[in-house]
Image 1 (cartoon, rainbow, N blue to C red):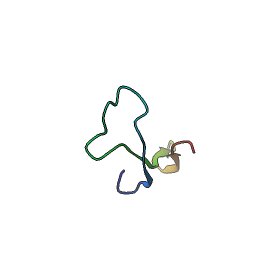
Image 2: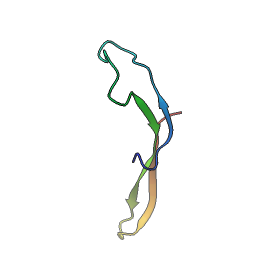
Image 3: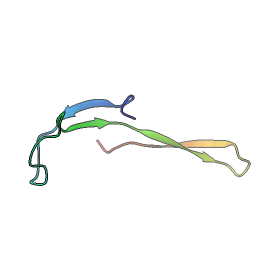
Length: 54
């Protein structure tokens, strides 16, 4: 999923549980994925696309 991800951005530590940065820093990405929805006949009816809220 990281190969197709967009919007890479660095994020500073926001809590005590992250006392130090990870080896390459804390990066966030925007990504999406889809799951097929099948009809009773077994044909792909549509895809449900999931993406993070903006």
